[in-house]
Length: 180
Image (cartoon, one colour):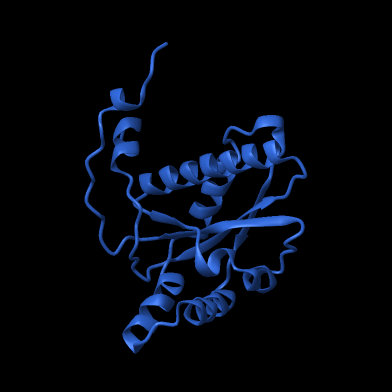
């Protein structure tokens, strides 16, 4: 697949099969992600591959936070965390300089795109989730991270898509380009 096709076809995957993605493929994606543009070469990434046992704790936390009212919704909340083959917590080393922290977040976003494109090329989907359990204060404890040193920016779900979402229309680029 050429690069344009890869970029245009990649979708955020919300539902996953329970099939396992080879660890080697995920690790290669992480190695490639370190080539993201990184102003000042701060190398700010704090990636945590979350084990099944730890994912169970995060699923419990997600249920506690969402307070789903039915067994079906409880299962759906848990499946969101447990079904993907891999769950990668996305953290950034903290910087005392707001501009550096801003640049480091941009680096993280670029690295997630690299991971997502590489995996998509292999038929593997991803979703960056940044709310609820993924950045909650209890999550730092569950993952053994110090919130004074690391900022959690969410989790990246990685797995075989249960189905591929449709491609939404995109506006024409001319709407966003100014010439002065």
